[in-house]
Length: 211
Image (tube, rainbow, N blue to C red):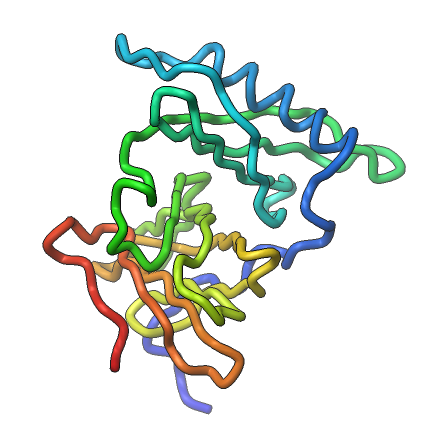
């Protein structure tokens, strides 16, 4: 094989290692998430009461494990964010922290969406010639049936992928590198593309899957 045209980190994050959070572990994570939500600057918006938290597959990168989440609120908003932690002695979770934001752009208000995704930059990677990639945590759910694997692709180069677990997936991938921007794609069991979404697509720029 010859030299690579795009030298970027691929599959840098560990694949999901645990089941989706439940029971006491979900309660522990929820305390961190809701504490961050209580401290959130809502810019004068009344978000209402936070409803049940939906957890997404864990991914680990650079010494941290990230567990993303979303939660609807009683006033029609959605909280989105993550709890992260490190593994201490005997693999016990420690050094918890959380990040949360909110939005009115929900899947319920956008029936044309095929993927419902959230993203947050969690780090950076410095490449050739001073170019820098934004290492981005992406999590979401398919809104079309039969999806098996979600991928993150940079200029058609797959840089991460995740099996869809209970209609949810999490990715960690380099974004915005040398003019290339991430696309999230969903595939069926035969490798056929079902849906795609650019993290930067506006309402008039959303792409449709091939026929």
